[in-house]
Image 1: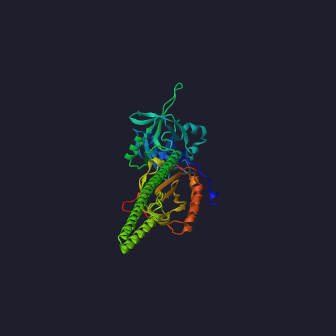
Image 2: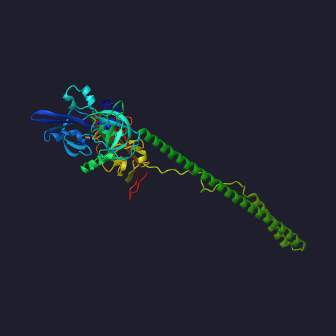
Image 3: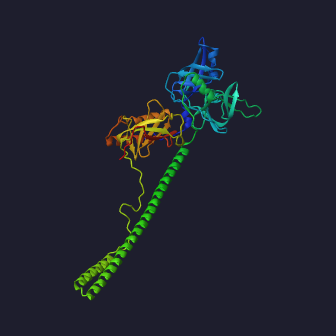
Length: 503
């Protein structure tokens, strides 16, 4: 039943950003008569704050106190009234605040942009509205923004403002809409176009990210900025596979090296044991030979004594000589055979094994550092984390994770944000991975219905509770796209003064 509530969604960075793009409508009314109308585009930098061009709201300067500003989201069924709270006519930027359903904020990309790189414009071009709108009501009806693609052609100065030159198709109405990199991050605010004359190509101009960041900072408006380059999930997964393969190859090489050293040690031990055995055998044979010679000498001495009529002494000499010679034979017979045995304390071959870690054992506090080369960041913070991994998947003493093989998972479905996060911790490698999926309003409603079936809210040592949580989270995972929009990887180590415990 859980699985039937929703089918897999599709991860699309541009569409995800499009949910934070709005149409901005301005209507000037004087003495109950509409004397001015305009519209453009904008995008959310906070759940209730919109960036657009200053010229999109220029009716405010012509009819002060008589202009209504409408904010029309791309989803839902309502539009909202807004007010300008900051404006910079020189750099053609404005900040609008509105009250209503929160919008997913978009992130600014503050890293370098390569000329010739792909860019995408989102907005509400007026020529499309003229072709499709049946009445003025259509301008305040939520619709998804139009996307056009092109390439980044370079930076320029226009009237003292840094702008980005690009070839993505824009028209009147796109003003105030975002210009995006392939990850869906804002690199500029579309503001103007060149006019194509006699077949000349037209270009678009976007207020540069640096100007936008300065404007928001001056307006004391917090915003999310990301400086890591845009990479695809496929590239990240490939890098992960290559890193895993390198780690496996290094482990195999270490095992082979350890085995080779063990073989050399064994050979050295065998040689040493063989030399010792040979020396011992030679020593025993030398003793036997000496005893034989001494015995023969004693018997010879007995003969001399007997010839001198010293019978009693002769008998003693013969007896001693005979015993010594018999002893020599015995020593010779019991000499070492020369077979070589390793000392008991020297194993034939020892390959050290990595220490095992119990998946249910507490590890204590961990310091987790962001790994940029294995991550894909669109809009999230990459601040280092401090985690407290308790017994049986209890994170920070309050959040229960569910077993997923030797790893532990927790899926977060927030009530307000349009994001599903899958958190995974691997106690064996001390890696912590957050994958995030940016979904539309309808997809989020469906996932929230599945999430409502999850009853385990706190940590539990009961295996049945955790198994039930794993089943419910599996239903949520089935409803998610095949690939996430973000993948943020952390590498953890025991925090200062903390010690991990294994099993």
